[in-house]
Length: 266
Image (cartoon, rainbow, N blue to C red; front, side, top):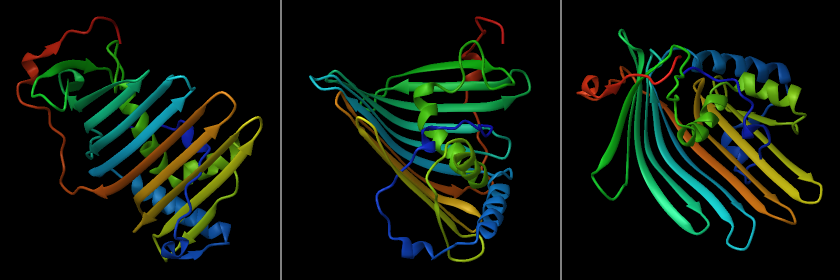
């Protein structure tokens, strides 16, 4: 999946306090920070196989049983050709009703169809599953849709934190975000922490922490909570990253017989 430069909920972040000593010495030299950020962004955006584990939750409670909540536990993998694999579970709660879904999704380049999207969806408690296979346009989207929004949303965090120089400059320049603190244990090591508290007729607190080692993302956390007179909402994202050497995403066998013709024009 190509990197997306969308300014996400990530832009207003706050984390619970962390053991800053484990991240090294605080850096006051902004030029050194920028140097590290650029080097990490360059390394992260080199073609490579990788795996990201994302655990996330989001909820909104307006009282009187009017609560909506989502939780995700996903494995996201990519290879050098920008093919992707995504699998895991999504749990949804709405007005007291709960449902849990299990997904496996592949999006792979193909000489005949440009890209092919293969999706399996079912219940974690049964072997039965629905399978949908369709062609995807070169821009990543088709009349059938690309990556389903319910799966894309938690992955967007990774699409931002993979590029520390971009996201840090965007936060400072476009959002007036609170100043970050920077820590390093030496070359290739950087931790960025940013917290904020906003008050109006309610309160919003947020925190983000992104840690990079050996010029690569190690892990990241984002948490926020908003409370006012009418509702309470919260978000939490946790991810870990690792490089996968010699990894290639391939479509499940038999996909050719399942692919359907597009119902519209790209």
